[in-house]
Image (cartoon, rainbow, N blue to C red):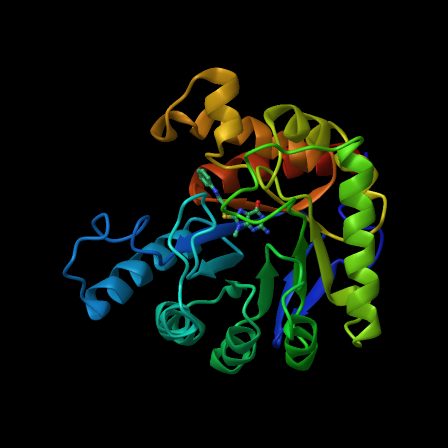
Length: 291
Ligand code: 8Y4
């Protein structure tokens, strides 16, 4: 079995330590109106929204999430672009509340340099960028925070990425892209020990590409960086098994265990309690074999 990461099993997340000796769970807290609150009705109440998100965050922390990932931009195809102010207003109050109240590492899902800086000030412990710090100023902003960064692979842009994904060899291309982004980070002074990598399941990938990436995960893990994997509820499950969104949990758990078996360090999921148990069962068997 491959190690979760060859070295440095502990990340420094703004003073909170993240032990990656065993695989851990990152819970998804979405603040976008189309996936949170009551379906984006015209009348929205910021106070109620934040209390609802806090209740979700508390539940996830109790259920075993070590990290909570907070995003204010929807990356689903066809989603409305979000202004900087709106993204800040959605994310920052929640970061501050969670930092004050819950013993978790807060990851901020953003590609926006200004939000990276402000989120770090508000108490974020990690940055998660689906654009791998490719936006103007993002490398500099991330470097200035000193926080660990998850670099994710995406082919194209959210609006059009699923139109015609194409690769000659998806595993090699994803690995080479991420390697280039690691080099770009290092040039700006972000040390390797603070970097995590993610193949970006579903981001400009067909079901076949996703399957090839999951089977090829050990080749990505071999680079020695902790791997973040997000497969929970994604359309791959719908397409392969014909399951609607509400019926994707069992397959999501299977995928989580398969990812961990192939070297994933962090599982990003909407279903924290079930995923934490699935991953803990994997760790129990793993440690049984080690003694
Ligand atoms: C159903 C459920 C359908 C979820 C689509 C989705 C990842 C990520 C997202 C990921 C990292 C999503 C922000 C897409 N996915 N960040 N973010 N890795 N690091 N879609 O796989 O969850 S959002």
